[in-house]
Amino acid sequence: MGSQRTIRPFETMKDFEECVRFQEETWGQRFSERVSVAILKVSQRLGGIAAGAYDDEGGLAGFVFGITGVQAGEVVHWSDMLAVRPESRDAGLGFQLKAYQRETLLEIGVTRVYWTFDPLESKNAHLNLNKLGAVAGEYVKDMYGQTDSPLHRGIGTDRLVPTWSLDSNRVIKRMLEGRSGPEPGADADATRVFEMKKEGELDLPGEPDLTLEALRLLVPVPTSIQLIQNVSLDAAAHWRRVTRSALSTYLDRGYEARELYRRSVGSEYLLSL
Image (tube, rainbow, N blue to C red):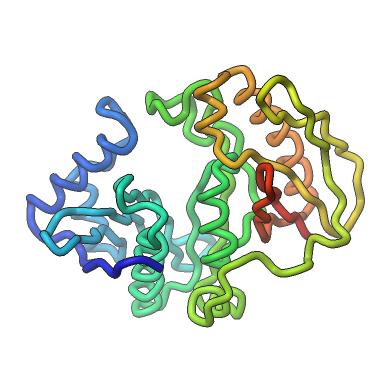
């Protein structure tokens, strides 16, 4: 899982100001969606989480921020931001921050958490579905509009909204019992919504079949949409159009994205009824 960091709530003005700078370093200097010092502080007073992961020298290596509120009479948590410095990625720090978030929320009686992630970011999908045990049954087109973050160039801000049931058997098995991969063999009888085609050096999606009635479906996504954006914004936009059509159609019909299978070329969501 990588080296363990010290994770604690932000306490001093220096802590909060460093978190704001961290957001700008992650999403761009002119990132208009950054969370201010005032909101970070106020969230802690109302059951929210604003906490950082610190290395041995006291440097901020990552942070998690979320707010707690009421939805349909239930106290729930919205996990708004999670970021990790590039040199600390792929070492389990994102998982450690989510584990801290889970334990903290369970202590105050919150068991349901929501957030958003880009369905074309397969690393995030692997963490959210396979390792944390969340499931995603809602697709929102351009949830945040057109932002000024360089990460969103050319493809908008479509998002999946996962539901993370903190005390469920699924979450306990994946977070506490070490089953961090997708369900073995669950994709064996699944039907692929579209096939891939090669155009030059890029793998691109074909036209999706939106008439399928199988119990389990597979929706391919690229390993890294960022790499595709670096090569061709048109190709990245094509990925967005096709996966938007496939995922929004089937999730609206009651399917959930429950697993992400990482293949030799790209990845695939497993959708189940």
